[in-house]
Image 1 (tube, rainbow, N blue to C red):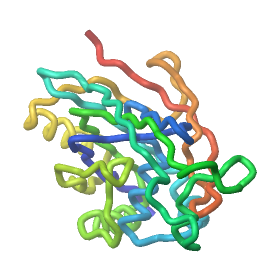
Image 2: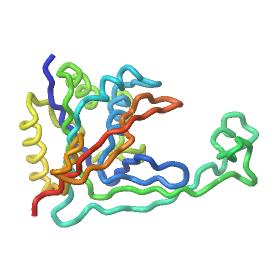
Image 3: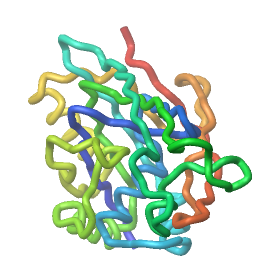
Image 4: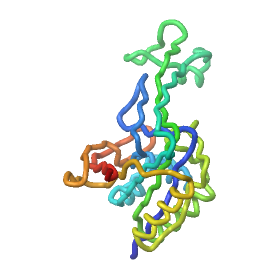
Length: 233
């Protein structure tokens, strides 16, 4: 079976791509994680639950990400805070599940509400070139255009402001060219390229724990290396 190259364009007022953040502090990477992109695909296809077989199919596919920002502005980081667990009736069986518990799983003192700190990217755009089996690429493309569940840019409050699907191509060069055409039309400049794999001669190599093996209640992930390539000055 031949492979095809799915081009996605991720743009919106806010984006947030958490990697290892949890609890009261939710950080964001400066580019989309593979787990988030797989989650977007699962949401668009209405694929709920663990999805171990489907995620295994996506695990070894190659993703190249181009990060863009406005020619007049750099990508900026916004810090926000939210309270969780406030206003719920602890006597109600369902609402009590939404109240944060102690480390022992017991009800907290007082209301149980707590402040969480969350971080968002502003003025960021990404082109994602995803190498997939041709039939799967076409299936995902159809669902991205007409998703079963809402697709967001990392978190549910991060709404896309541009069509995500931008085409399926027969080779990588065509997809790269189209991504650059979109960026030039929007007057965006490429700030970095994220390659799958370790290429120390090309840029900074980092390890991410973001290959999803199982979604659902008990999520599982494995590691991968990515190389961050800065544009030549």
